Length: 393
Ligand code: AMP
Figure 1 (cartoon, rainbow, N blue to C red):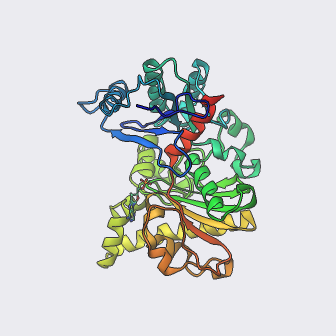
Figure 2: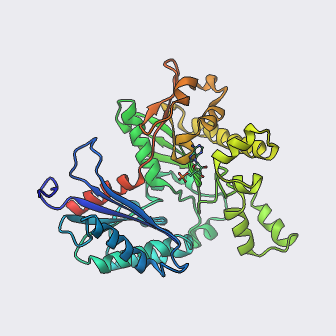
Figure 3: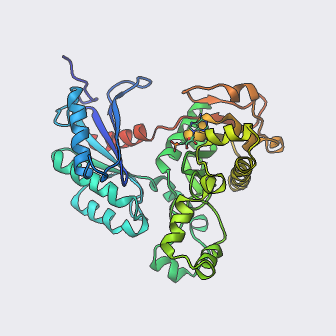
């Protein structure tokens, strides 16, 4: 049996782990498979960690190891080159994929107050994977990193500077791995270098964020200190007057944790109409459901405000790229978001927009000044590439 080999003939497989609070997603990719070749060898998900059968992340990773073993792709394989970990918050310190050391783990631990739900799970995943394969390079790829190029005037909130600095309050942005992948893919689709194009990326999944990418560097994004800011999402409110929080505390008698849960878990589309799945909202709208219609309209209105704002931020827009669950699949959202924007040079072709598919594609008319694209995101591939590149050094 021939084994896949990297450029130097060494191991070429990368395991990507995305450890959430109650789940671990994994993918095993072969980075030696040539460009355009599907390099995905295995993928899976262990859910409901801590709810019985799967006691903890340690148990979850052992299940993943067993699943891979069963396919002859074991974690103990000499063909495994490295493990890449998605880490949500890199603070101001981590602006690039980073080889994990004890010191790096300690630094990620220090960032837990900025991402109390996410970073602890990421750290657990890293610790267990390092115990399983202490000999392998392990790499942390941060969701915030791509946004570290946002200029100070866009990253700072207009609050007292001393207070902001003391508590590290600034716009960090998230979904960075996706924004990086999709903005680069948009340039490729146009047959240009990233440095030549300005792109607005709309990552519309259950979580949603927009970014403005100028010549390959992110200059603005909609999520902030946490993923709560910006667009209307599946269960998050996105932008609101911060005084809503004071009002709910003072007048509503709610605790900070209750308000946190309200805004992160019971707001957005779910809070507005009882459903956070855009497919269900579409079905209800077709039946004339008024709450679903209003939720959709609020979602679209916010999205259009960001498209307008980022057009002004960039000055010249070459492409608008839709990605993630809603962005890749909902022609209705794409159409409504860009309708009537011909004066901005944006023209969507209705037939192209209606075509479904897994490939990156253009949905704008041939005369549209701004290219509009649907680009399936691939965060795991992006993490694997970064991990493999670092492991090769
Ligand atoms: P993600 O977080 O990227 O996995 O996106 C998940 C969301 O994508 C779901 O909550 C759905 O609302 C949305 N979605 C998935 N498939 C479709 C579809 N065919 N049409 C509209 N929305 C979809």
